[in-house]
Amino acid sequence: MRRGYFFSLFAFLFARLVLYLRAMKSAKQIQECFESYLQGLNYSRRPDELYAPIRYVLSLGGKRIRPTFLIMAYNMYADDIERVFSTAAGMEIFHNFTLLHDDLMDRADMRRGKATVHKKWNDNTAILSGDGMLVLAYRYLAESSAPELKKVLDLANETFTGIMEGQQYDMEFETRDDVREEEYIEMIRLKTSVLLAACVQMGAMLGGATASDQELLYEFGEKIGLAFQLQDDLLDVYGDPAVFGKKIGGDILCNKKTYLYINAYRLADGKQKSELDRWAVYDGNDPDSKIAGVRSIYDAVGVKALSEKLINSYFDEAMTKLDQVNLPADRKSLLREYAGSLLNRVL
Image (tube, rainbow, N blue to C red; front, top):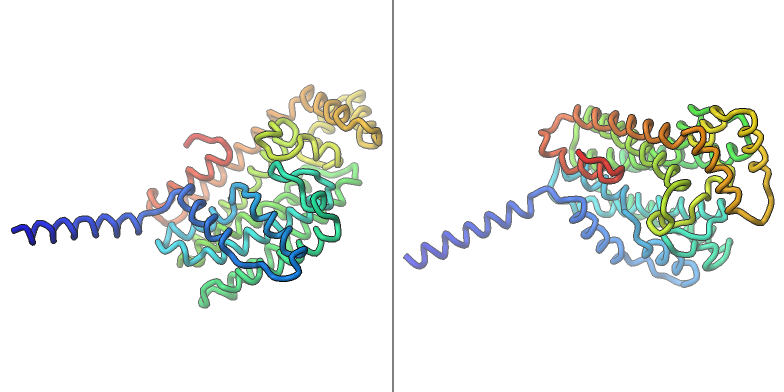
């Protein structure tokens, strides 16, 4: 009788363990597992001056949004999430490569509350170490499972090309006075949204999703990416530096033609337009006055509320795409909740 009892207990506990291992993982569980994997990667070679900045950038943490989306999308279709960690690492390393070079182009001092690479080392080191990160990104993407490897690399190549195009548009917009809202939306779609969208599609692809589901999830990621970037632009003007992880007002100082700026100029009266024109060519040594001056015009014409409305619209579109994915609602709930948490939405 005792033997039967212990056998039954063992069977019960084993069944619970199997259910636990097969259960869908929360965003927090995924991030903890992936972070351990990422920090355990061995990319230390000589000369150390090339690799130290790479280790530094990847040690700064961050929300790991893109790999989390990739792994969560995979987990909707399959349980062995460790299978896509190398793919997720490749996309995260590429993302950080773009940030490293973006900080250099923008002459940014801080990233995630720490000194940027070109400030901690120098410009040349930032360029070369960034190039090293790009190579590393492809190294880990190439470890994706064989049946889907070419599709993964094709999607990555198209995505990375789009990001470079978006960055070029972003730089060109800084010296243009006639940037339209639709041009700006297309620029941030390329520069920001396509990477998040590709991560979601890659995860679903590797999990065995149908082509239709992959397309819907790509569109879901694209809309979330647009909402997220618009929110990032909003935080750059109205956020708390301690929470935001970098100085407030960087877009204003760089004369970025953001959604906020474009619509502020459109809604401004003659006097306000003249003020915006004056700040655009301001070369004084008091950057805080420029930030405050431009922000006061934003406040006066109400572009903060306008931006929040568009953010909510893109979020709702994303949820509609997710609803159409051919999976039971409970398989999509964690991805829905995670997307909502990024935009402070209660679902």
